[in-house]
Image 1 (cartoon, helix red, strand yellow):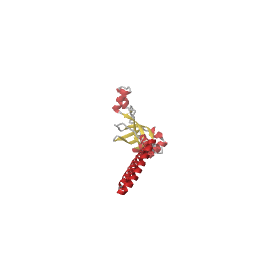
Image 2 (cartoon, rainbow, N blue to C red):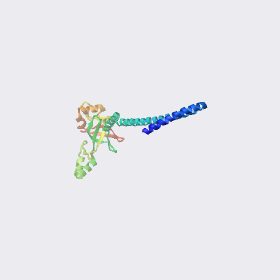
Image 3 (spheres, rainbow, N blue to C red):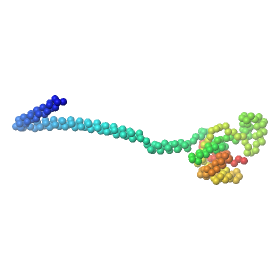
Amino acid sequence: MFRTSVRRYFHVGAKAMAACVCAAVLLMMGGCNLIFQEETSDTSGDSTSGTVSASTVLSETDTTGDTGSSDTSSASDGSADPSASSESSEETSASETEYSNPESMYSSYAHMVSFDPVNGLARFDYFDMLKGQAAIDWLVAHEGYTVADATALVNDFADSEFVYKNINPQLRTADMSEVDITMMYHSDGTQVPGAETVSLTYAQFVTLYSGHSSAVLESFFYYVTVSGGEITKVDQVYWP
């Protein structure tokens, strides 16, 4: 390092002396312009070199700054998004009201086994009401009756009597806010006179259930009407 400093110092001194001598000589010869051009050229070269070095350093600093900024951005991207939580809550709420029914839905008598006033969903347990030959065949095949005994029993049925068949545990679901509703009760829990049902709005049905759930779930059964694969009407049926 010492030798380098001396060498540079000597070099600068030599150039200064040479410049003085040449200046004196060339001043008379009109050649000073050439010397000054060379000095200007050398100085310009050093400035350019210094500028490049500074530019390189700044570039590295900027790159480091960009990297830091990128890291910060990544950290921000990884932070919790409140809107994502809100969307998740909405999806959960939506999924709670979803339900599925068999692809081949049909109209049938049914018991309403549950109703949820929060989402409006009622679940029904379908059953078959067998009469005539269908009732006889069922009694023979499943209840141990002889043909003669089953025939005698069924032929003696009153109009309101039937053989109850319920072998499918699958429940069907209806959105009560979307169907037509007729009931044997008014919204205040009063039973209608006779066998004629009364139409209720969904709000009236909820009121009836809230105050008199037994009238909805434990009294008369229902006839569920299906149209286009969906339950469209729920009628409570008077049955003596």
